[in-house]
Amino acid sequence: MGLGLENVKHIYLEGIANGNAREAVNKCTGHRYTQHSTGVGNGVEGFLAFFEPFLERNSKRDIKMIRAFEDGPWVFCHAYQSLNDGAAKWVTMDMFFTDDNGLILEHWDTITPFVDAIPSGENIIGGVTEVSDQTDSESAKLLVREFTKQVLQEGDLDKIDQFVAQDLVQHSPDIDAGRTGLLAWLASSESGHYEMLFNLFGQGNFVVTYGKRHQSGKDVAIFDLYRVDDGLIVEHWDNAEEILAREQWGNSGKF
Image (cartoon, helix red, strand yellow):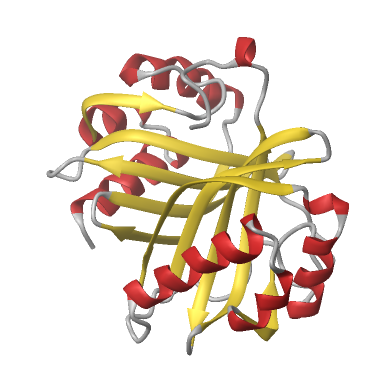
């Protein structure tokens, strides 16, 4: 495990789950901490201005990092939060940029409610959790990049079988099971248009993208997490959050 991933786990689990926000943010961040999480200000003090009251409001915090991996300076984590004995349940996907010493310099996330039942019948955070280096990272990233470009952005749905396994395991809260479920969703008006790919990185069999969709009359920031095996996408999770009006931003925005 690299220093960047160690610091991300520390700030998430020690800082937020265990309530030691001030110690963790001072230990794990670098010469700047630029923030893109809705409602959280920049820097150490911006982080504490949000999370110290959060810790007071939510005295019971069950927070689990379900998946986490790194690619150079980039770190990704997929987490579940149950607050105050399940009064609120959230799924988050987070992306961090770190310096040469693994200290966190920048953070992006999307936060959505946990839902018990999804169209595919799978668990929204279930599935494979372990990174496998049996899959070549560069080949997996290229596959996902071309899928994003050709299928999601250019809308060439006839090419979907070049990228996605027939028995795709689907964890999205909006999409039905298998390649046919994904194809039906992409062909519908509900999916909107994937307008921008902001970042893509991965480790072994996992690749994550962060971008912007326009759907149902609104802009959303969306993480798509893919598991690749034998040259095809075999499992998918996503997490989307509406991009608020600029006057509601607590920082420089989702991107």
